[in-house]
Image 1 (cartoon, rainbow, N blue to C red):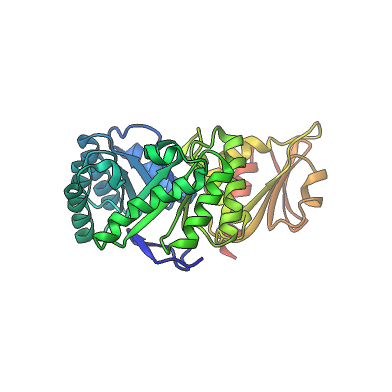
Image 2: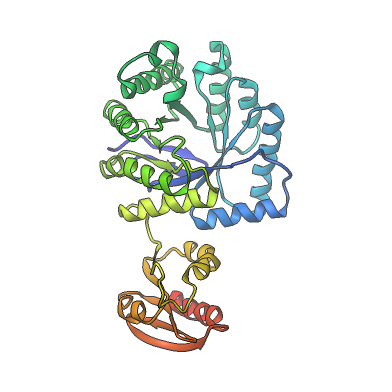
Length: 353
């Protein structure tokens, strides 16, 4: 479903724009140093398009603003979002910095004049605002409704009405619940009524494995119907795993753009090559590649050039040696000690083709 376009920094959301992947920083923002900037650069290379930070206090706005300035100086193009509740002054301060988006709800900001101040400054700075509605924090009259999906939609529409009255159109909306059916239905209903870009998420999805499974199950019918401009996989896990999970979901649905498809065997008693350790070492490099191709990482020759013969580039164990192959053809046989270096050379050659 085509929506209006809203820009987050230089990135368009909605319309025919690519679906963007985002995550949220998992801890209070501390010292801004080279280590933090390096981690954010690596997060971007994994496929993080947008990064959100909680700003519960005024001093958090200062730190986030300084981080945004530091990213600009370092040449790291990663739009930052400030997540704000209750205190409109925090939003106003964030807007003094190159913050790409603000997340507030008019309903918990307070008096209307406070909302008007935030929207006026956001309009002046060309910064969009996301309205976020969660099933666990509905207004009292809506929390008693039997149909939770429609209650979430009505709560979002109340917030949107305030923006409409004030003529503010650079709005995104998220409608989230911790159960799949409610999340899917709420987004379907809202998308049928409005042209506002949607931020998809299954809130509090859980630990790594159940969280990914539930989120993928919730996203599939929505994304397949053209609903959703940006996604976050909300895991009780790392930011990196949220981003990779989001990219893999989009890739599985044919919506992720150019990226490597990494296939690997599950390991068994024939295994002579530690595929898990290899993938951990090469994760960041492989996910940073923007090319449609298949990489196979196999533990033995049974699953290597044979079952992995469709791969553009592969590596597998062969007793005390390691084979590097392409489309079933062995390119070279190397020692375990040289495997990473030789694979790196083969990958560089493949990417230059």
